[in-house]
Structure formats: structure tokens, C-alpha cells
Length: 597
Image (cartoon, rainbow, N blue to C red):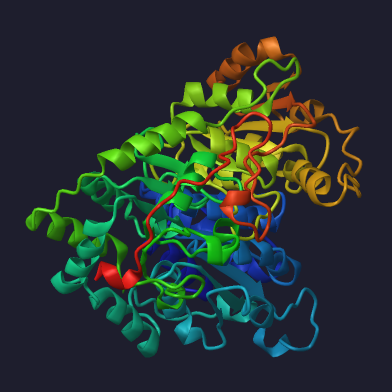
């Protein structure tokens, strides 16, 4: 095989069902190899390996991320050298920040031209080295096949992340024997992974955990994206149900528990539900699972979970333990195994805590401090639109978002029955993520309802991908909540900059989104601007059998509430005009941690 053919065969061997990428001179041998591979597969009556071409390489990266986030499999992006590779920097960093497994294969100028400022040359290893989990520059053709397999191993193992493989054009054209197996030697890394995997949660450690739980009256699980990455949602649900422990999730942890469940308190944090944040304030034992106490959750770290006598933490990354918030009990290891061990020990030893009083308090928090808005307004409220979408979807849709107010509204008002249904850029907060991520998810799940909830400013970032939707006839549903500007920026300017709207509306007044969608081939492209039409139009939009585009002209002054200001604690949460604010915090007895063990 040529090196390029080895790359394609190795990708196929890893179980990848779609590639996303944009061609160019330095990657053409591999593109040709994809063509030849599919030609051979077709002759043999086998499954093809489709290559989805975006409008921009950044779109390819986010499509691969959407594919990965919605399946748990490694997403693959295939781009050329120079600008093709540099356009991938943001998706790579985005995947690294949210622990998403992706392999990016970049073409590179021939080995003899590296360092000469050749046409479309970029120092990929230097650029990507600081934002990727690992970067390979393949200079020995005999190691190419093993490098590709190793890239997949690194991407999916441990704490997942993006791996970049930079392949010079002459290495792609090289010919050699395909081995069909083998990886590069990664002794230190593999030993570290084996040690983590082998670190099982034993009876003694389980006993100390349940000793703490036995003294708790208000325990609370704080679940993060690590639960979903570890495929531990089922184990988390069983653990929570077995011992009656309510659950709050981070933005990235949405879907780890069924949001319809009584003990689900939905999302906590800067824009979390008021009842979720008040539960964190009230809890006397906090159990962090696959969560990292980031600034959008912990805020004022010293006042986060102020009444928790014990904080317990389970994570696969030892660096996360005690990194932000001191914990009294911890375990580093495989999350599904750890949760199964705790559940089994508790059942075996007859642990049956009675948290009925806490359950009643939680139910009351959810009743009193429920999400709400001005339901009598004559203007279309974004929350109302999302409630209608949610009523029809029933928690079964895959929903992606851009970044901004619409992202938070979707997190607050949409339900999710299971994991990998919520796709959003968390740590990086990358505008333009939603549309290409929805494309990647739809490619992976052709029969699922996939909805991109976007904003007028965010969707512009990768607006060219509308044509990608129609080119491949993907039934993606794109809803743009149009408030004519950067709504989240304006909200911050109102609250923290004395209302000075510095460039937050930009020039977002003239674009006709509906005509643009029609020009890109959307047969269903509608503008919704009357409140009385919301139920009918939303139902038509979601029922349309092919690609559908809906622009909703929403109240430009609609805000995201609750809101916890940066660096603030939950007791200073701004709940807005339609959600009550708790004036007096619940008094909770606070024995010292030493009394728990």
C-alpha cells in the first residue's frame, strides 16, 4: 500500500463510519486513497467510508466533534497543510478543553521542504502542541501505520482528547507493506493508564465513603462531563437511585441523569437552576463525579457548598483531585467500575439511608424556585419557543447549540432522557459550534431528530455550513433565536458596564436569514415573528422530513436568569424578575469533617 492507503485502512479498522475534511495539495494522496477505498468497498458490496466536505476546515473539526460527542467514538478530520491545519486549531482546543476524542490528520509539505517556508507550510507540531493531547509528525514512513493506530489509542484512553497527526506528502506517497496491527511504544503512558485502570475501589475505601454518607442528611451528587465520557451514566443512575441521592449536573454533564426524574436537579452554576444552586448551598455532603469545580460552577471557591461537611471526588485524572477545592475522600480510577463497587458494597452491607426529609426539601426547592419568565408578554420569549420544542421532542432529541444566551436557555428549558444528546462547547465557549456539530451528529445518527439551537451572532460564525446540510440532504433542524446582536454580551454590559453597549449589536440588522437559507437549498425556511403562531410553526418545523430552518424574532431584552456573577457565591445569585430569590439561607448544622470518619 501507499502511505495514504495505510492511513485510510487504519481509520476504517478503528471502526470509524465517517470522515470530515477539506482537501488541498498536501493531503490529496490521502483523499485519493479514500476514493479508491470506497470504490473497492462498493465492488465488494461492503459499507463505504463517507467523507463529508464542509465549507471551512473549522466546520470539519466541529463536525468530527459532534460525531464524537454524540457517539462516544473517535471523530476524524482530514485537512491539508498550512491554512487547512491552522483552521483546525480552535476545534482541537475545543475538544481538548471538553475532553472529546478526535484524530486530526493534516497533510504537510514534503520532508525535504519542511522549514523552508514552502507553499502552504505551517509548523503544525509547534502550533498544535500546546492545544492537543498529543501531536505526531511522521518522518519515518515505516512508522506511519502504527502512528495512526496509536493516535486513536491516545485519543480515546484515559482522559480523552484530540490527537493530531502531521503527515508529509512524500510519506503519503511512500509504498510499503501494510501490517494490519501494531502501535508505537508508549511505555510510560500505558503504564500510567494501566495503573489507573487497576486502581479498584476496595471495601475499605467504600466503607469510609458510606461512613460519611451515614452521617449526612442532605447528600448531593455533582456530576460532570466525565460521567458521559466514561460511559458511566447507567452506573451513576443506579448509584443515585440505590441510595436516594439527588443529582445536579454541570453544563457538560447534562444527560448523565434523566432530567425528568424527581431526584434530578438539572444544571448548577453561573446559569444553573436556582433550585440546583440552593441545593448545593444546603447540602452537607457533596459527591463530585467526573467534575472539576471550574469557575462557572464553583465561582467563589471558598463559599461553594459552604455547608458540606465532606466533599468526595471520583475522577480518572489524579490532577483534578484537590486542584480547586479540598476534598476529604477521593478515588482515582475508572468511573463505571468505581460506581459499581460503591453500589455493590452498599447493597451487600445493607445500606438503606432515609433521606425522605431531604427529598421533600428538594421537591419544595424545585416547586418554589422553578424556571419561569414573563408568560404574558406580547413578544416572543425564547423560553416559550424552547418549551414548545421540548414538548414535542420529549427529551429524545439530540440538541446542539452555539454559544451565548440561546445555549443557556436550551440547557435550562430542554429535557434529556440520556447521555450524548446534549452537544455544546463548554470550556472554550466557541461561537459557531452548533451548526457543524449538529451535522456531525446527524451523520452519525441518520434516523434521530437533531436540532441546532443557535443565535443570530453565533450561527454566522460557520454560516456556510448551511449548504453542507442541504448538499448531503441531512434532516438537521436549525432554529435561530434572533435578538439582533450578541445577547449574552449585551446582558453583561447591562449588568456590569453601566449599560454601555460597546459593539454588541455590531451590524446584525440587515441579514435576511430566511433568504440565505433558501439560497443554500432549504425547502423549509420560515421566519416566526408572532407569538400566537409559535405552537403551529414549531410543530411544522420539527415535522418537516428534510433540512429545516426556522428564524424566531425574540424579545431582544430577554435575559438568562438565574445568573451568578463571576467570582460570586450562590447566595448572591440574581434570579431575575420572574424567579423568587431566597432571602434567608437554610440553616444547616456543620460538624467538622473529622466527626465524619
